[in-house]
Image 1 (cartoon, rainbow, N blue to C red):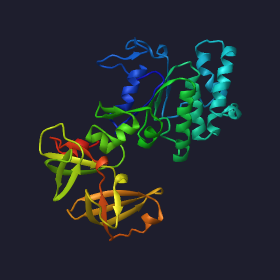
Image 2 (cartoon, rainbow, N blue to C red):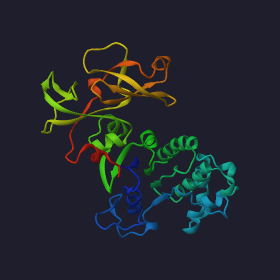
Image 3 (cartoon, rainbow, N blue to C red):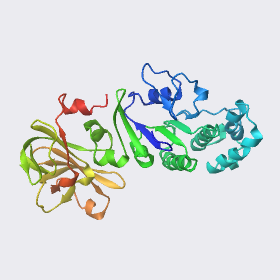
Image 4 (cartoon, rainbow, N blue to C red):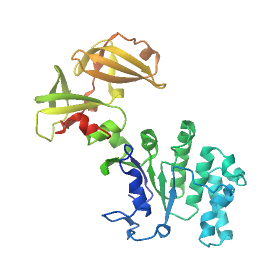
Length: 341
């Protein structure tokens, strides 16, 4: 990680996200490998001496202490001069918008306010590295969306480095500088949110981050600075040359990049029939059976034009060349390559 970076770790349940950060924090000792914090090897350094603030998913506040006493607990238990730390305590409480609740007890606060207090207590310990283990997972969706931006702003304002574990991809995409994708105890890919969404290097990442269409086909040869691919009888023109051998390939495209038209275009146009429509709030999701018997998922922003479509309508699907991704067909098969188990 870079200094002052906000890093998110995502992956399926049981893939090792929490185990990894517990190794970093010193709660678990790794069987092998080395952990460095500020260029210092910390494998044998006790938890309390690693300079880490840890925020758990289960809101860990002392129920018999009010919010102020909860937040000041770190400096107090370390035997620090509380009077000299009070300015920082007050500043953190103001930043977290908790100053008017300092005399309240955790049981009287909402889940969001309780988690803010837990974060404040971690920050007041003087830690430069903040570890957040699904800190928003137990909160309501509306509260989560507000608090995740506040968390990032706070980390950036204080010049901290943060490792944030989450199962919520939207959360990671919206606040991370970079994202680590894990699967079965291994790091699959690391990149910025845009890199992982637009140009994932791995089929698992492409499938796990957002929704995507996978089209299995065969290379027909090069043409127009790209390649032609036969997908069950339909031809796709992909503007890149594969850096791998083998005739079997997987073409991928995000549903929101597919254009739906009543009239056909030039290249990469498939015809089909709308079989299902799902209202998602800001968009409408379409399931379309193409003439080559392949199901395509498309998404259109919610608008009067999108509402004009009906189940059973015939539609022309334009698959823009610039948004097509090309992968070698995996030896273990596509289903196993993208499986989250």
